[in-house]
Image (cartoon, one colour):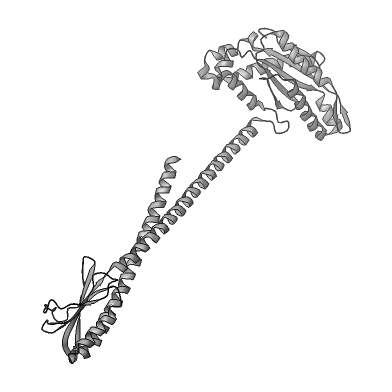
Length: 388
């Protein structure tokens, strides 16, 4: 998570820096082009105005016109020469704030080649030659200008774009981090949703839809968990109770299947209340229920637990306007007496494949014990004898 956030923030900084740099370069180019056009226009206009004074050798007029032009503090010097390179008028200043002064040296300089007007910049000063024409070339104007004002503007722009780039980087970084967190939250919610759906499917697969108790597969899973747990496997000592409701068919025939379903649900609620922690109960079909007691190796304890269920189910059930009385025939088998689970625990790696057969054997024995109760008058508890 930390690395991803650093990567996102870095991406935002880079994006902001690139956008700021591109904007700065474009602005610099536009400013320089605009200033170059302005200086070119100034030089050509000044050269055009000097043409008349140069034609009549009006040096005072040329000096006056140059002084007017140097009201622009970016001009460092202005010089007029004739076609032979003789200096006619030369004004210059050391700093932009100084008053232009008339200079008398040098007396002659080499003018540029005919038509050469391209500016040359050296040490921050741009030199431009412009021809002075009065029908024919009569001289040259040499202007030297500072670029300090442009640099100041560009430095200000650089600072502004740096701030803009930082804000952009912060915004992009915030959006990226926020988007990343949102995607992570959505992924977590989706994962939780899938886990919930998985648990719901497992619950549906392992429970009886009417009563909410384990179905046969759920009981097998509970037994398997016991056998796979090293802490409980050695002391599993299972006792299985087959519970068959007495005269349930009569309830359906007399009161209808709706009341019968309500009765099954009420029986399931009572059975839950009779279990100890670690025990489990399920409905394996019709009016047959099964309870599995863990840690029950003594007949006396098994009989006590089963008898509590029998006594509880004899009590009447109030279902709307109906008062239903039933009972249950219960057969019990102790694995400690049949030696099924201990044999299974000797091979825990095979517990998964053998759990079903182990439970099947215990259920058959408990079922036989329950039928003995049915044959002997119902509403009783019978424990399968050893070797049954």
